[in-house]
Length: 141
Image 1 (tube, rainbow, N blue to C red):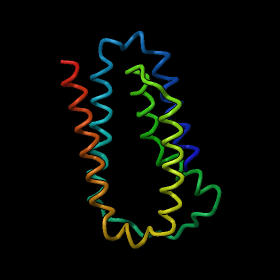
Image 2: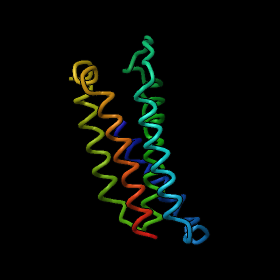
Image 3: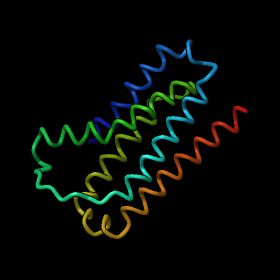
């Protein structure tokens, strides 16, 4: 998971850097829209009922699929980094390290903490992304 979370911002940054000249006038709108969509998605997903399925998280295929699926938002984060010409190395190191630590802690404490705070933290994360999007728009208007 940490590998994919660290890799996806790089991929997003590379994609956005290659098309930055074409979208430079609208980059703040694109970043704000992407962050807002991610924020709304997080909030909406927090209200969905969880389906209990049997799966083996230690299975390599399951692990790679899960890591890829949960890192798609990091692709858009990398895209946003490129649009604002911000550095990439330190955020990628931080993202990978934090993801590794949180994934390990999640396996240790996941059932207890997830049951108590999971939905609330997901809503909070979505709200924070939307606030960042609004801040981006206000700083460019």
